[in-house]
Image (tube, rainbow, N blue to C red; front, side, top):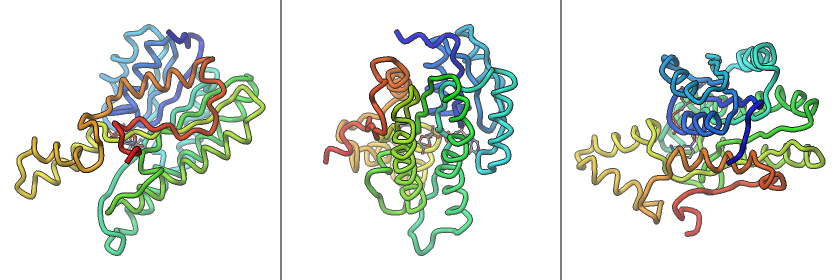
Length: 257
Ligand code: NAD
């Protein structure tokens, strides 16, 4: 098992879903954790702290570069900096492009794409100074292919994969790596809302869930947050040190079609 004791990981959007699963895997492997995200963080902090590392929570709204800067300064002050940055916070909105609300476009680009730029540019100097680091961006299969109704999300996730490649090249001769993970469907609140929207049209909820998977994900099973956590641990390991600039899909066969 990868030992990350003595390392500090910041996982954005880790009060729920995929980010929480990744935070738990990193904590289990010995890392100190800085959590981030909305909602009451007390239970999440307790769950992550059970593995014995130091745990903090910073409530930055990652759509605001000044709040991201404050979070990175907090990490430096309270934890001695960030070794592992997992850019995970993200939102979704589904509408045809000619009806897409402009303010939803702006917030998806800010949260799903620009925040990755800001947290990366502010964390990299510390990683370079320490001589080791991992930047892991939770993109999506929607960073590789499109789907109707998801203009902002697909544009943002394609942008994240492009940014990942540039950061990987700019750090290529160092012990800092940068990669993207591209999940298919994972059953989190973000996806449950899309299932609920289908069920609201009168379809049985179980059928709505099956239809959602059957359209895109050949395994007909959801990817799980712990599976994504294990992939993050691999990217943090020595065995993962020459994986650079990858967009690694974990998607039940979605992109094989
Ligand atoms: P989720 O809704 O369960 O969790 C999102 C997290 O982000 C929460 O902790 C929330 O508080 C936080 N967040 C939202 N806006 C924020 C903001 N402005 N500032 C700080 N935190 C904010 O969603 P999830 O499904 O776990 O998604 C996590 C990431 O995984 C997203 O980037 C999403 O695009 C990506 N992803 C999800 C799936 C899926 O099927 N669920 C698939 C591929 C990629």
